[in-house]
Amino acid sequence: MMKLNLLKRTVGALAVAGVAAFGLGGAAQAESHSVDLAGKTVDFVIPFSESGGSARWANFFAPLLTEALPGNPTVVVRYRPGAGSTEGANWFQQQTTDDGTLIFGTSGSTQFPYLLGDPRVRYEYKDWQVVLASGTGGVVFLPPDLGAKFNGSAEGLQGENFLYGSQGATTLDLVPLLAFKMLGLTVDPVFGIKGRGDGRLMFERGEANIDYQTSSAYLKSVVPLVEQGLAVPIFSWGALDESGAIVRDPTFPELPSFKEVCEATAGCETSGVAWDAFKAFFISGFAAQKMVYLPGSASPAVVDTYTAALQAAIARPDFAAIAADELGVYPQLTGAAAQSANEQATAVSPEAKAYVLDWLKEAYGVTMQ
Image (spheres, rainbow, N blue to C red):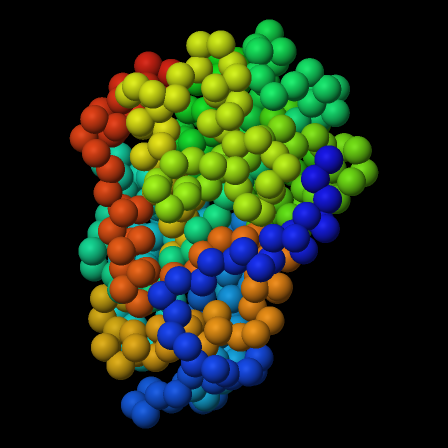
């Protein structure tokens, strides 16, 4: 059973990339000579419900931005869920706010429809200006009776019938659905939930018997279930090491990665087109899963102000500790590093895309038309 005290052993491993050495204290404020947000409200919009990992991530950064932005504006998280997050992203595409009072937070569930050519997508990432890229992870868990059948291999679960609450096959749920397929599990997704938090609630009510949550939501909402004996974590998606290989997630070092489980399960291969597709969407969906954008209309001064504010927040002496408890142990990228992560997360090879599109059509009747 994973315990919260595991985090205390890994706090020191938090990677903070792309951050200038500000030497600022906990309440440090980014300096700006041309942007002043005093007395203003910043809307931090996310295209999800208030119960999932994106909500927890946004509400973690909101007060840090209030402290670090010039003028200490009130940063309010607002929710615009719908259509697997494409509804909110389409709305943001139309916004022309240029004064720094609007920022938008995306997730892999926003990136995947874009990558796959989903016809609901009327947004273009290249039009937006990224100021933060956050890596994350995720943990798959089961009810205790099914968790007892897991021994590092998925073979003991292959005869079970699973129900899984899903936002849609082209959302971030593409990663778990593909992983379940590769492991030979029989999983019937119940499409239509508005956020991963709703999937967890289905699990808690007994309406689903397999679920995963991103790290921030897992730490807040699932660890208590684990400690009460109501859920059993079986593996994490893993994390990328410096060579690009999938290794154990540093936030959950005692859990095997999906790669380890795949290697231990007959019929699951960690090479070939299926693995390449999984890894490509894992990178897009998790290694740079959540990003903060300003509209394309925002001035360079506003972009620089947000970059400086986020760098100041990440440079706080207590950031590693509070981030580990709230988000897990993952890099928070700004500046050029965030731009590079944005480029990787919004591109996929033609081969991986073709494989996934064929699988979506065959398994779920989903076509990008």
